[in-house]
Length: 468
Image (tube, rainbow, N blue to C red; front, side):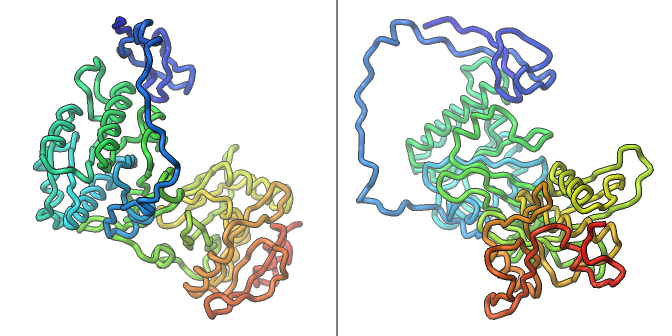
């Protein structure tokens, strides 16, 4: 075998360099390079040896038309993962500290274990008694879950194999605390995280065991460690939310066994995480009437329509660089909307302080929120409320044009279900006649430019077009 050699690995992006440096040239972050020992290289003679023959099979399997899943019965979780956990799959879930990742997984394994699914929960961060206290607080202490506190990967896999009964689901909390004893690196380093996850995934797929990893996140909200970890697993979930709010969002960003960009909404209560069956009604429950700067957005997260409130506040600024504070949306996209309103519509808004908030602690990523944000900004600037029973969705281009977005009928159905009677949408091929949605009539106002937002205000002092 070749000799083991040392290398310098960035703990943020995984880039390898031959010498230490204070700044990583790949991600340009400081003090993230650490010295690690690389595995011994393969001898030169081994490259010429013949490998064993592998068996090839056809793409279709007539013996099995539908693959089984472990359905937890937690509908918000099952929707995000595509209908349940697939045996042999690897799932990575990340989120801010204290957001509720361990609570969600503990509720998951306790629910599955009561359905004759053999579950093993291994915690590398908490002692056994701490996990028991949480289970007792949640009223789940009677669930038949095998619990352990360990960090050595070889010991964990040997213990799982030595139980005698096949394990259906293995929880690793968290992967940054795991280590393999024959690697001379500290737990949490790039080499340890990559090798530990690879060994656990290989063991799980060989035995048809589903495994779920908890991953730490950086200050930017990305999962810490090498990016290759997200490529190794089958599903990547993010548990989002503001700890000052009770709502939590489980978002799927990668899924080999189901749709991506699905979300599940939970509410953090004293008895743990509770499912929210109608998020739109919850997010709009505290919406005030006749308040300027408030617009309702008909958003679409995955295949799920959801109505949220967009709040905007425009105030005179005494600073040379006016403030831009954004919560729940992309700040760069807000800067674009402000530039369009000022350049294409003549509004004097660039020199004002602007505060934008998506109420409820949810984050919106789709461009369909542009029209709702523009309407909220115009309403806040002119101090004139928007019609209370109106929803908005549409993408705003740099020329001020309003572009169509995906699934408009699905958004309109959700708005009609909650009692909204008018919708401002991008202009399509058909004329803007009232549409029938689930037996109710919702009037559709189609616009093709942001200047037409001025027609929405009922005050006669407000011009019919917002351009000057």
